[in-house]
Image (cartoon, rainbow, N blue to C red):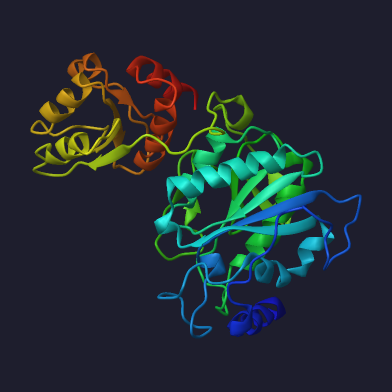
Amino acid sequence: MMMKKTLAAIFVSSSFIAGVAGSCFAQAPTQHVAKAQLPNVCILATGGTIAGSAASNTQMTGYKAGAIGIQTLLNAVPEIHKVANVQGEQISNIGSESMTHEIWLKLAKRVNELLAKPDVDAVVITHGTDTLEETAYFLNLVTKSDKPVILIGAMHPATAISADGSVNILNAVNLAASKDAKGRGVMIAMNDVINGARDVQKTNTLRVDTFQSPELGYLGYFENGRPVFYKATTRKHTKDTEFDVSELKDLPRVDIIYSHVNDDGKMAEAAVANGAKGVVHAGTGNGSIHENAEAALYDAAKKGIVVVRAARVPNGPTIESTEAWDKAGFVHAGTLNPQKARILLQLGLTKTNDPAKIAEMFGKY
């Protein structure tokens, strides 16, 4: 309770807004003396509600996301320095609904640069919740290290009396500092649970327990602040993937087409006309396609555009269905939701546009 009261007092002061930290471990810590026996954890900030500022401590919506700099967030949770040597660095300061490929690539390259250093043991990323699951999965596919990468956000702004960001920061640093976290892929540490990047979903627009892996389950919990694992993912990730973004300036355009009653294929045609290299069809049921939209997707596939069948249904795999769809080369997304299927397709298209090879990737990742 005292921490929340202190945070509200700190964050309401406008003098702290938009503070920016320097580069992680470019120099020795200044505010806290580094302890040689503790791991070194870099916190990269991208903005979001966790750094949000509102006019009052009871305002939970309509706040300014990404208004508070990373150093201010870290100063408000001094307990993190008991478990790790921590420094912060600002990558961006946005609401994550406005995330871009440019920021993704900047973030991924910085994560790989930091984790390649022998004196950096882990990275924590503060992020808005709207696209947190997408950034996490992207990093899960392109990070070239088995060192821990942990993403966190918050559902209440930093200025709120019920701010959840501070305990998420503390838990994330505890997780990043844990030897048990190594080699488990990118993880999300929020609301006292640990989720894997591949399976996690934002499931509620308002609740603090919004991030869940509904069918495949949490990787673990925080038990009195200590991370405890109960399962691991079986899909390849991080250093075991084939994807390399070190030289990429952008990602191929892939559009998501959301199916609905009376779908006529016009959105698929528009995607092709606007230069899409791939299309993810968020179909009904098991990735079903409206009969009036099939022609547009067949035409796209004939033009060399990779079509992935996903589902707008929140749980369950999208698997093989009609023979005609399989003959057309449509790839099925498995248990990836449409937004994550889009990410894997984008990265797959940096390697090949062969639907059969893309399908192999969906089977591995």
